[in-house]
Image 1 (cartoon, rainbow, N blue to C red):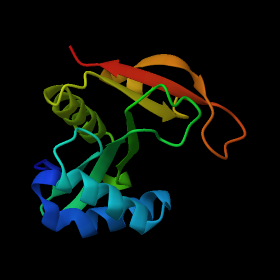
Image 2: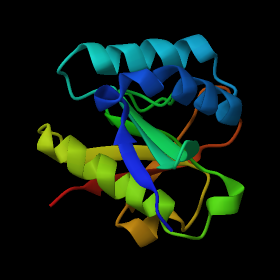
Image 3: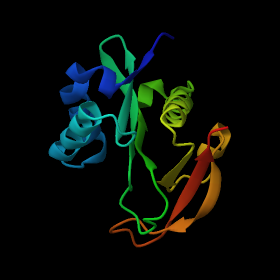
Length: 152
């Protein structure tokens, strides 16, 4: 399968489509994604960053790196967020490739440790992430699992 992982900062013409795609997957306001992607494009800072996997013209997956993914552990930053792969592209390693790409890119920008809050219990371990602690997401009754990844 041929797909490409793109950095939004290097492909600003995809910002609108990418923001719309993330909005449709997660229900976060479109404006929030657009603002974060604009910030990613407009400065040299490492965070925020956004990545998408493309199969020709179709967005098939994506994720972001932001300061805090709406949880109570403000000391654990930056966070991988909004990890999603389209149903018909799952179980092909795309999420792992996106995670690897983002971790390597962040390491190139001087950030070797990333965090991720999820309700998955084993998915991220297969990509080198380690369970760190429980953390409460905003508006969540139950705590989620906080993972950490250190780029070597």
